[in-house]
Length: 295
Image (cartoon, rainbow, N blue to C red; front, side, top):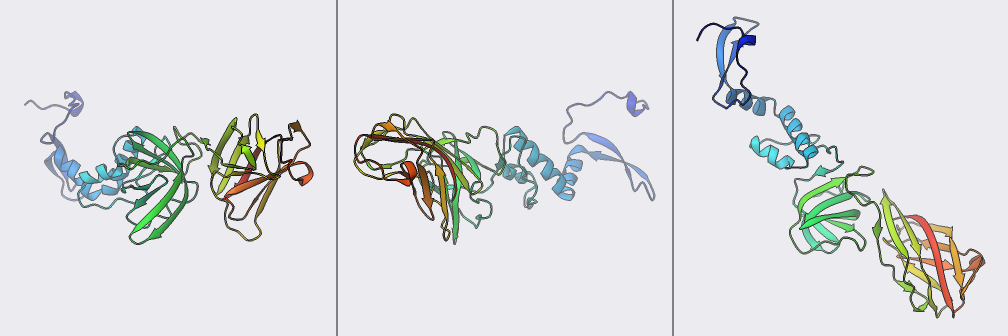
C-alpha cells in the first residue's frame, strides 16, 4: 500500500473487532509505532475504564428505555456497578436490577434490605402484560426480604404473575405516571350509599391529598357521615387534620358548611354538618371536599 496521510484515507464507518488502528507505544519515553486491534481497545475500556464505560452505557440505555444496568454489566463480567451509574433517564425512571416478586395485590418482596430505596411516596412503574403504576405507602425488612406495600387505587393492582421491567422514581412527574388515582371509599351513615361523582387521590412524599364529591348523595339513616381514606393516616400523638367541607347537603337541603376531621392512625375521615353538628338521620345527605393529611 502506498504511503498516505491519515486525512487522505477512506473512512471506515463499520469497524470490526479484528480491524487495526495505528498506535504509538510509550510516547513520553521511547516511542515505537505499533498496531492495535479494535477489540483490544474495547477490552481495555471495559476492564481499565469500566466505571466510565458502565456509567455511559447504563445512562444511554435508561434514556432509550431499553435494557437494564444488569445487561450492561454483563458485558463486563464480574464487575461491580458503581452506585451512581444506574442514574434516572430523561424520562425520570430508574431501572431496578433487583427482582420484584409478587406477594399480594398490594405488596411485593425484594430479597435484600431496600427500605431506603422504597420510601413512602416513591413512584413505581412495572409490567404485568401492560404497564402498571403505583405509589409506595410503606416498606419493611424482615430477613431475608423487604416487603414493599403499594397503592394504585382502583386503577392498578398487582397480579399473581411475574413482574418485569421494574422502575422507580423520586421525580415529581416521571413520564407516563398518572399522578391522580381513583379509589372507592366505603361509606358509613347511610341506608343507601352515595355514588361518588368524584373520588381521586395523589401522594407527594408523606402527604396524601384526596378529592371527594358525593354526587347526588345517599339516604341517611344515622347522625354520622364517614368515608374510608385512600391510605391510613400516620400514627402520631395528638395528630389531627381538620378542614371545611366544600358543600354540605343535609336532610335534602343545602346548609352552611360543615367540616371534616382525620385523627392519628385513622383509616377514615368523619364529616360533620353545619357548625360541627350531627347530621339528620333521614332524607338525603352529601358532601364535597379536597383535603391533605400525613400518612
